[in-house]
Length: 273
Image (cartoon, rainbow, N blue to C red; front, side):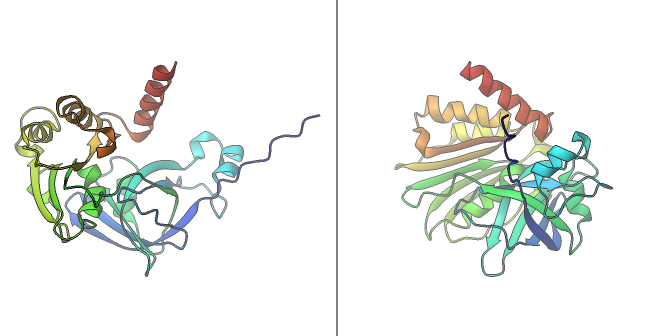
């Protein structure tokens, strides 16, 4: 008789809320303490946050292997992916920014009500991008969902590094200030005063941009629709090598993360079949 396969250990990592701050009308910064986080060196490093369901008692530490084996699916924690805004190794402080639109979604409402001492479980980090110090100049493009990664990248640029940063937000109240010592040209695009589709301003700005001489390093992340349109300009029209560009559709307009991940998985399946 064949023995059952041993259960895979899926113990999650632990973080505790230290403080929160509303840095714009719709952006909440949550600073957590964690002895479990390990920096991987990427400026787009992300974590998978687990939001537990109200009224459900979970094993501690949270083990998703146990949860999936013993709890009905409707009681499983909801997972959402968030980019780390910053990590302070000395203080063990992990900072994550959350877009908040009232009661919409899962993570935003959690951040709005988070109190010091609240526990948040996570997995990760993942990631793949950090500014190439050998590049002659940098281009960073995104929306609110990419702001944490863009901010982290700008603040890691070496002194004097040239960068053009194009960011779309709702309006001028959602603009943020970045630190760093690079020579950074930040341009904001406001949906409240724009016509057309989401991301049109970013797409037009990239298409019209006079690329400086030298080798660029490009980062384009955010809503999948405009990322796809900029991808065409960079690869087909400008002929950039794929090793010079980091592209990711973090989300899709009209879908939550579960729906978007399912769509991407189905697309990948069709392409491989």
